[in-house]
Image (cartoon, rainbow, N blue to C red):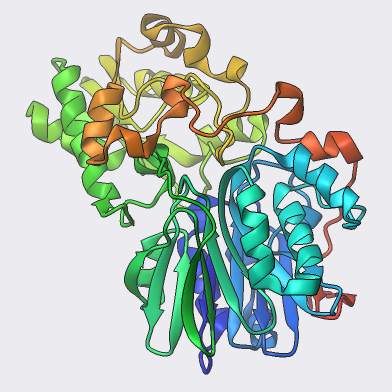
Amino acid sequence: MFGVWAPGEDVSKLTYFGLYALQHRGQEAAGMSVGDGSQVVVFKDLGLVSQVFDEQVLQSLRGHVAVGHCRYSTTGSTTWENAQPTFRTTATGSGLSLGHNGNLVNTAELMARAREVGVDTSHGATTDSDLICGLLAAQAADIGIEQAALQLLPTLRGAFCLTFSDESTLYAARDPQGVRPLVLGRLERGWVVASETAALDIVGASFVREVEPGELIAIDENGLRSSRFATPEPKGCIFEYVYLARPDTTIAGRSVHATRVEIGRRLAVEHPVEADLVIPVPESGTPAAIGYAQASGIPYGSGLVKNAYVGRTFIQPSQTIRQLGIRLKLNPLRDVIRGKRLVVVDDSIVRGNTQRALVRMLRESGALEVHVRIASPPVKWPCFYGIDFASRAELIANGLDTDGIRRSVGADSLGYVSLEELIAASEQPKTRLCCACFDGDYPIALPDDALIGKHLLEGIRGVAGSATPVLTNGYGAEDALRRP
């Protein structure tokens, strides 16, 4: 998620490059809105940032305030209607676009409330994000967007980093637990908010601070103002350090790369082994592999080559694509692997498909032994706060102990870093972290199983999607945009 308020700057280009830096966080759809003081124009489509936007589209998006989003679905299917930013028109005719990172747990409750107040839910979107936008637009009719947000945000439960705007003002908000990261940056002639500090770097913005949990920020011609809508109860996602965030990002003052290297060092102490070479599963396993080699004294080497143009297998929405993607993304360096006892360091095991195929590939390439080391504890519980881990039944660590997983993936040995050592590497107190996927301790209360899930709203409404990119202006008109 990326937002910019910068009069006189090319905000669509800034947003494009900001989203490009955040592409790892979502690869299903991309979009942006631009406001010029009189209207809001939204362009979005399914696909990567570089596929959705071209020079012609960016040139058409003129203004001083922009909201950008690249989607990784946790509520709602991968359809055009569910791409973000989502757009609504208020009763006064003002446009409102909104991007959301995270996942709510009281979506069914919000759906009932939306129907009560007359929010139109028939246009095909099936996301919690669209409900937020619809409710915000409905409440803004009488009191304005800022006051409506201060009323609505305390009623949302779950993980939400929001960036939204009307024709002239940029807003950003973060849930009271601060589950997902959100940072504020300064341009020479404006302000930027982004999901990670790496996106600030790419557009030349200087890091100012994190948006605080429970904080609403508004930026307009009068400057930046901050309001509190809830008391902070920090519970940052520890999996951001393990996998989600870029290594060149900083979260809560701690470098993600430094954290991952330290995890690798601690992993080597907890699970030593006699071997000839430490190799990473690129790219997210690389820093931990470096740390493992440093602490163990075993040489570090590159045994796997990653195709840089294949997306993350974990983040793809279907099991079939995941399994095909494993073969597409990694290829062994047989001369390096042949005759070696290998320590293979990866960031996590979720379903086990990647590791199973990987161990088989390494053995076929001549590895004598394959010792798998994982830079996180076993993932035993699904995430309801913005990671699509699927059901508990699909998590390999839910049904098997460590030796059972070792046999399942075909490794000679398997070792996970302990939760205590992972937390220590993050340099954050456990009280400020959400570790629910590892320990089942959910910091935000969950509803009944029947009232939660990725396809909850589709079950209620049963809506099909289309795939036509659309430009939407601030007065609610929609024109299909045909690509040349």
